[in-house]
Image (cartoon, rainbow, N blue to C red; front, side, top):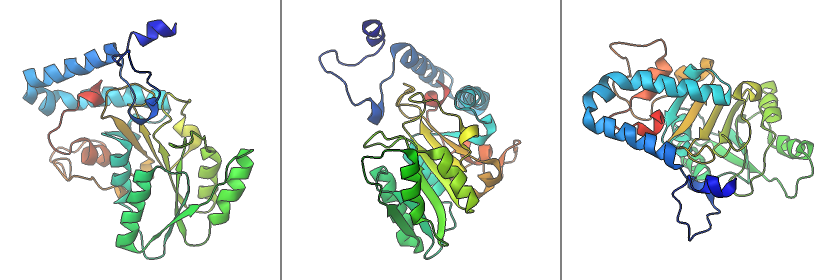
Length: 270
């Protein structure tokens, strides 16, 4: 089985590829479809980008939403989880001494993003120490919730950690956040196709995942899920034609975020 599957990938056969988690690898049939969209873009760019792209994006969102169990209109595509989370983090109305509670196991790029925004707002990024090894999810929950206080406005947590591959009890933490009126943002970069993802069941406020890792999609496609009642609070990272659109769709969230200037969306469509 595995030798046959290996033939589907374009990886150098002289290298034993162990780090699939960072950037992933794309099988030939998927990569061929990706190239097909790129050729279509170059053959008739105006038709694809001005007319065809939005129905095609909807088709992609529909397929992804069924795979991760959410509504297709509650998610948008993004080049990577870092871009998706920057979109969210820069939209938050953080004030001085507000606290973002997280752990000491988060992805370094996002630690830097939170530190950046905290320097601008005066908010505080609190990294609750979670000691290893963990013997149970209850042990994690008990250690983590010690960091919650009246200043905690946001919980930010990895679903699967980048450095240790620990699976954190996200469903229980999302429930804990709601009980304390705290916004819950989940970094699920390593989750899609790695373990089963059911966003409806987890019930986060915001969830980000990568498609180029374990889903084996082309590089440059991730997703941002935002609960419907929060969508209008998320600003576009780049303001373009979707803002106060002359032809608005049924969703301001989609209008603001789906079009952010000319770009090759082949990875999204694949």
